[in-house]
Image 1 (spheres, one colour):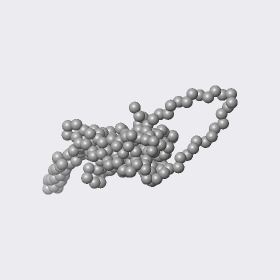
Image 2 (cartoon, rainbow, N blue to C red):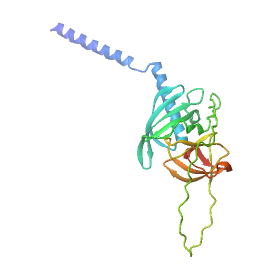
Image 3 (spheres, rainbow, N blue to C red):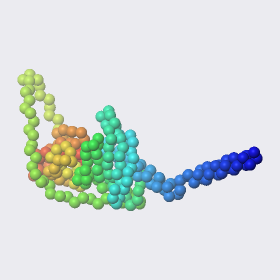
Image 4 (cartoon, rainbow, N blue to C red):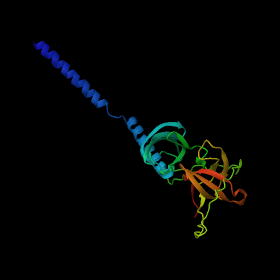
Length: 241
């Protein structure tokens, strides 16, 4: 009987020892803690960049893998038009080290709800990110030829005015300009449409309509390009001062 008791006691002590060893070794190693901190910094930086550039109301954000030198993919969900939609993208680090600041990240690609809304050709227009201290500056893209093909201008539908109703005074149109060194103007609202113009800081535009984040614009200046209609991702255009 005593031998059985000693045997059971030995088994219990051995089990407790195993549990103790597992408990002591289950904590994060210094390398694992460093990786977790790095992922947290990447997540914070990409989220700050999205808040500044894309207009997405981000709900969840998960960084993925490093797809190339200085580039990480990410995915998540966002609030849009009263519903939740998934998104996927690629962000590029433009500072010399990973940081949480928005201006240390550059949006390279963005797909919303399975539709590509920003591609690599379009984000050449985003302003170069400049960070002080330990930051860096992204190289400005080279400007290409201004026009590659002609887009047919759509004339407005004629309207019938009442003979008795007084005509309202014409309101001056808001003038828009691009926010980067070079912006791609496309033949339609999406990256699947061909690039038909490359716009610079000297271009002035009039907005005709908006379609799911894409703006339809008519070029006002310079005179050589006046009248051409193009589509540009609306976040790459701002009101001229």
